[in-house]
Image (cartoon, rainbow, N blue to C red; front, side):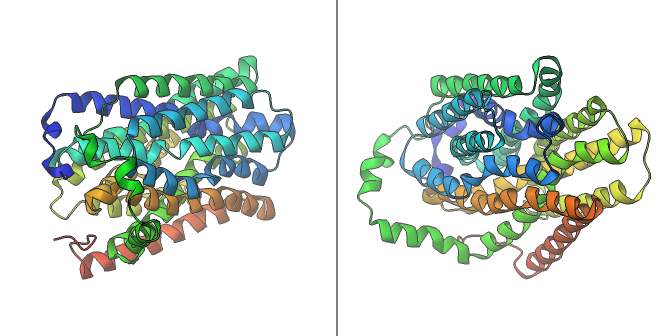
Length: 417
């Protein structure tokens, strides 16, 4: 039975699924998305360079390059409850242990382990929502669920600096671990599969498949026009997202001499606007006459305008900076809602988990490489301008390519009619 025929998509329990999937996403990414808010504390305490701060973020995103592919395949074979639940428990355990790290390398190691568990949260929650919601509500539901990421980031931006100021940044890791633990328990207790017939999906059926044929079928997706467009746009937009997430507070603190609290507050505003962006833009994609991908292209244009404003227009009042942070957050984080709905909807039902994992794994390459690259540019040039300029150029290139593809292939899909 395909997702579009599933009677459970009419069940009211789908809203419970949406709630717990959003909670699981927010709790799993709570610390990963909030590390930028306490980066200044770690940098000052251990006398780290901006490159080393970027590597801390990359450490948590390294394993998901492969882990997302593994998680995606597991999601096509096993119940999402166990894949997501166990992964989030691993996040919790690694973060709690990381508070005892007494060296930079040890902290990197614990964050790598965090990334291994975090690999399951993104594709797992996305597949859960995709399975439980029909097409006419899928974008809206996916937007709410994906809002869990900036929601977790917004809450961590508000909470972690306070914890770091009062008790030390190490206690921020414990707080992140406890939040992840709560999310894992909730998901394990309340999640139900959208497929009521376990005979249709499971390890026995999957194990019978030829591994080589399965992998060939999965990676053949890379040849599809839809995946090429998804990869180009995803890599550029995720680079912008993490540039905003990690370096905005440092940029405002160094360049405009804002206090740590004020810089963290602006990051909180950006994350909060991202929550709204993911919901509103995804809901728009459900009804957009120009197609579900058009809101993603709109985000690219808005991001270019926002970053140009950030680096070239003098803004020294908190109100103007807050408005700009909101703009960048709304579009710089909000793009992910319609983008991931486009991925889930375009893929064949039997390959949804792997398609999500493959698309997100491509993004992970940028997530791992971009933070240290931006940090290195800052260390070499003693300016944030080259880094912001790089993000603008990447987004502009992706926008031009996407616009050309939209004109050539107005109904991009994975070979589906």
